[in-house]
Image (cartoon, rainbow, N blue to C red):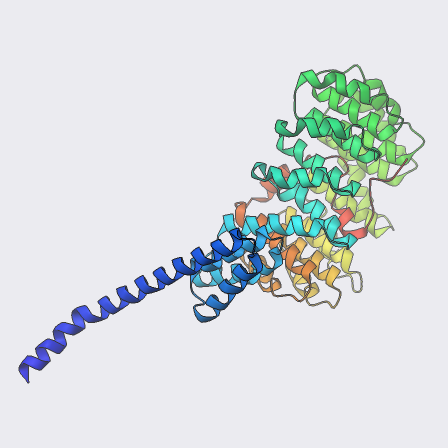
Length: 450
């Protein structure tokens, strides 16, 4: 009896750990085998069979990480990135932490897949995500954008090249200087200027001969960035053009360049008949250092046109001014005007104020998937743990557009460290000309044809 008790006691000390090790070894071996078999199927041109094999295995062993990770990467490779979302949820839930690199791969895959969509809304948002999320590791995706049949997608891809300063894609930019769409040509001239190579001045001087004024304005600004100010007259003339869209673009470019010598001409535009031109001129002056121009932006907050006030709030946030916060908090209470509420929540978020989170959370329950998608996008600007929790819940939304926006927002939040209000305002202070949040919340496009 004593011997049996001793043996039993001794066994307890080594049997359970051995069983555990054996079980883990068996699971690991089985995982490696199923991944190896799936890889063989994929290489043999049978990716659907590989995905089915992995799916069936994970039904039996849901906590297996390597098969699930390979299933995610294979789904992305096969342009079925949306199928990777529940698998990412499973991995992050099992590991109780996020995997930023894997999430970023899913985000890029979703951009690629959405760019092929026949839904204009989804394609447009994927193009914006391309411009905001893509990094230098994804040249393959940028190239797809540069070759896309939709000119809006091409323009966003061009902007991405300029933002990243990716000189490896300069040849593609040069080709797009002859694009049939004037806004793609304008974006290309600007991106070439952003690359910072003085040897490109001759290309930009050729663009000064373009018949579309938007192209000329961007080319003149690009030359300025490369140290050639000989085309400044094009910018000053554009400030007085008949077309308000041209005057807007000239003011934007001058605000980006921070050129104080044109202050007087910008001050004249503060009396422009077009209210949006006035706002752009005021923003440009504020960036140049004329703080008195901020009063013109603040005055727009009391305009009867509510959306004009919202846009003025965005511009105030660009220069780090927080005076619009009371106005924005009041806008959060507007019943029946969801775009205004989301726009207010977004602008508050970039100022480091999360008062709009409740509004975004409420809109995530709206029956309109476009509004739910906008709410997810807005949460990406608000940030914080609660926003991340809401976005993870949105990954299970029935609408593809909402799930995609949730992934894109999560990618921004999880990959980027939390920023203070001052840091967020500084990071947003010089948006690319033509790139404003009001496009997301109103459908208004600065890229209006001349």
